[in-house]
Image (cartoon, rainbow, N blue to C red):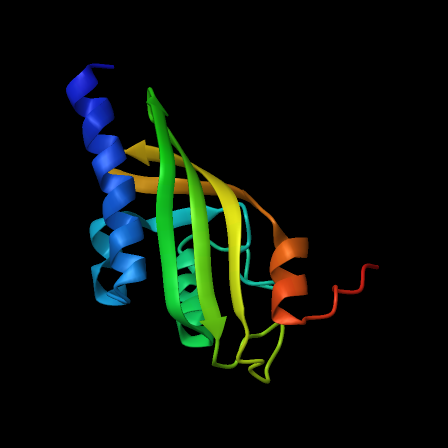
Length: 145
């Protein structure tokens, strides 16, 4: 893969972060393929269906005011872009995991891995400090079966 294409993939990913941080959900189709697969499950219990990430991002923005995704590092190779991020916000709206807003702030590191094909993000994988996020927001840890 040439350096220009790798740079375009990185710009696509940073564009997605800027759109989310600016709450421009109407812009998401510029960055995400219609059938994008989110292997991370943005929202606990999110449907495992192509394209479900669109609603997941909207739900996150509804639940968290001042939501920001700040890239700290971007590494790209082939059709993959890896981003180390600082993600922050304030829990001011209903969330499927915690319907009553706590009004508390959070800031956690996350690492997202994107697959880019034909100029769109087609897959998302992520690892995040959920324990840190839950502790900062005062949420209970989910029960496991």
